[in-house]
Amino acid sequence: METEIGEFILHLATERGLSDNYQLSTRRSLECFAAWASKSQQTTAPRAVTLTHLHDYLAHRKRLGLAAASIKLEVVALKIFFRWLAGRAHIPHDPAEVLPLPRIEGYLPETLNQPDIERLLAAVDTTAPLGLRDRAMLELLYSSGLRAGELVGARLENLNLDEHIIRITGKGNKTRLVPVGAKARDAISLYLERERPRLVTKRTGSHVFLSRHGKNITTVRLWQIVKTHAKRAELPQNIYPHLMRHSFATHLLEGGADLRIIQELLGHADIATTQIYTHVEQGRLKAVHRKFHPRG
Image (cartoon, rainbow, N blue to C red; front, side, top):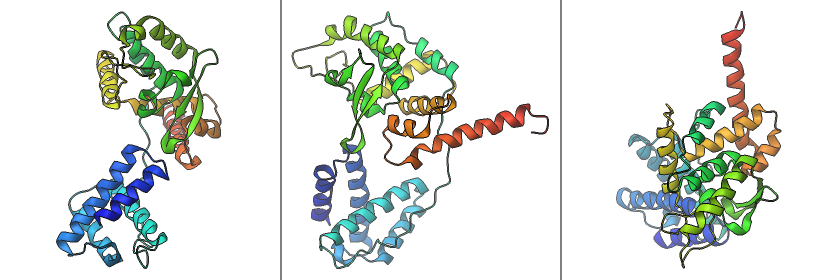
């Protein structure tokens, strides 16, 4: 199956424009299945794979302790792979067509309340080396609800501080315009004026946020920076970049923003993805009702 998997990943990259992380995750899932099929079923050709093989493989993964959410990702990878093979007549039929997706219990995304957001932002020492950069990054994460990859990929030519707008390339290479809040704009302006010029080298590109060596920040480094300042702020919960995005959406909803507007700002293709935040707000309303209402 190695050749077919390689061709399929190329299809995801060139024709679907999906992210590197998605390609790596899908490749990993498919290669894991291929290794299992070869070893336990002596099956190496996609046309020899049956629905029973797929059920047996997923049962095997479940026995290994794989969580339902991870199994769902593997099912999705298998379904889109075999659908692609059948669509191009590489196999006579799609064995994964009726493969069900596992049910996953709903969860509510973690968020920070507004006082904790203020504590986190205030914990950044802007007089320290790279402090202006770190403050600008955190302000933009919360102001615009960006994904970690979107923030580290932000480029100068897509940033218009006069108009309070940044153009973002998100999942599937889709672009969207996102407003930049006043405090984020001010923090970015200070960073661009006072700190970024000192970080620039001959090989520096047009990324907004640079490392001390003049290269663009990585998502791993962004995680480290967020955690460093969260520790300094003495926040009790686990803080990570995507938490700022969840907080951005939740606070907009609490402020009365329309769900469709939040969907557009977040770059969600499906409104159902955005609706998770309505459950967050409903949960808080119920908690307040239980606490303060005499018959709660």
